Image (cartoon, rainbow over all chains, first blue to last red; front, side):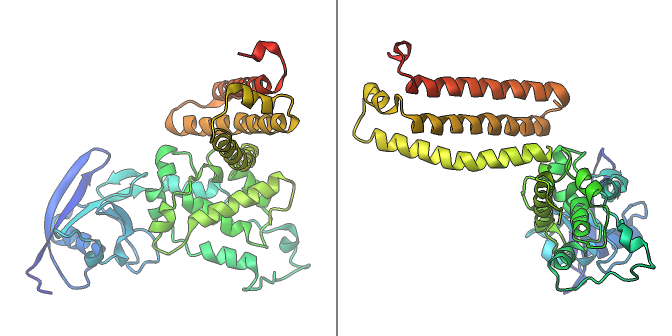
Length: 246
Length: 115
């Protein structure tokens, strides 16, 4: 593709209040959306704020709304995201407070992992190393497979941006935190299930999910948080009926 | 929504899926050749199965509808807390009373219910 071709890009400037600013960026073959933002920031307007780190789809820091769809920009080629008229509109993620331009405040999002008890709590027998040095977790076991299905989350916030329930209820824990909780519910080494299932069973927890599946549609890692949330609902019902959470 | 409300709503939904189907199918079947009110009442009065079915139906409605309305209210308005729960408990009781009254009206052989 010729470098003389230009891509017309509209970029959100400001925070909650602001407006779109237009840039023309040289179109290059295999160009990613993050390449476009970087070109603008380095060559045209150094005051443009955005966030990135790894550029290879591992860190989860470069997510933005691209032509209305939340995406990881480092792994999104312009050719797949661009409109038919050759325009690209870049906005910060929805359902987050905008810090400036394309950078959003992620603190509340990550705090929800904590609120959903999305961290490992070794159970007592595992803490006693004299009793048991290693927990054997067969890779083919159903629980390990269920955990594997959701374990690759990079915390990019795309699902949180896409979720209607998060938009309605800012207290809702959201698909990422609930997916994380589900991986731990399936961790046989974990001893914090009671507190975790208590944390995700409130009005802001898994029962608030409407199964719209936006999170599952947009997750760049191909995770299905909707299924994880459905699993949490089942675990909750089992707990309420007095059965083991697992 | 708590786990208990979630379970109550799902169980009542399962009952409703069955009850609404039977209810609609019965209506379509009963009126296909034209029935008078008297003929309908002739079939429902003192029919214990009929009464039991509709009491179950009414109970499921009285459980299901307020929980759904509570969720809608919480998502679309800022109404939360005890006042919301009390209001929807009243909705549940009203639905239950009206429903039981309607079921008894076509079951009980009492002159006051005759038109």
